[in-house]
Image (tube, rainbow, N blue to C red):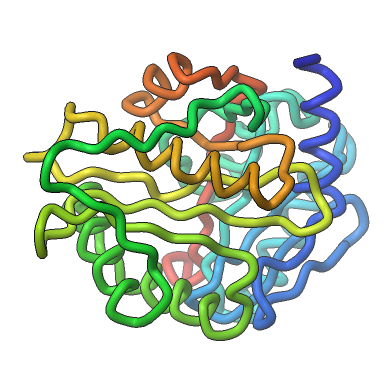
Amino acid sequence: MNHEEVLALFDRQLRRDAHADGRGTRVERDGDVVRQVGADHDWNGVLWSDLDQSTADAAIRAQMRYFATLGREFEWKAYAHDRPGDLGRRLKSAGFTPEPQEAVMVAPVRDLPTDTALPEGVHLRPVTDTAGVDLVAAVHEQAFGVSSARLRQRLLTQLAQSSETISMVVAMAGDLPVCAARMELNPGTDFAGLWGGGTVTAWRGRGIYRALVAHRARTAADLGYRYLQVDATDESRPILQRLGFTVLSTTTPYIYDPHREA
């Protein structure tokens, strides 16, 4: 895999020329900034920018004003290779709050294992309805220790309006959901994205997360995608590297809440 070529493809297909991730959202270009806008429970934020030392601060202020007018909290998803090199510092100075940095990892689908070996008594349940989304939300809260209310609403909307852009699965130990993950599909691109992979504490270290990666890799292969992409935490990065993923860049979400400034 050619690092520079794949990074350029990633930037072009998933950022600069991105499509909205649901029928209730839209992608807009504002000068040298590409953003997604939707309802409050949707992902609102900046996907891509092409700025320099002379244009960055004005562009940041323009996005702050725009989303404040809508009353939306939003995320500026900054990457280590974005320009200018001090974009993160400028966002912090403007009032954005950085969240933990993640590694942008990619693997060719053809090179990934697809064997979904699971512990005895654990099986996979595809998520296609409200009951399944509730299981995903329950795992999310237990695995990550945060509210899943907005995620649940977003997933329900996506299933109802554009189910062709998402694939979700829950690992069940009997009637107990122990791990959940989803794959965001990007029709017309070479990339499918792995998101939300989390295992409840008592079931970690048993290969379930790995099995769900393999399950999604097989699905992506069947759908004709060339690459799987994931924003990996420090916990998942070693597992993904062992499976064949490599680091393209790093990304840091910068969050701006206009209500906090009011």
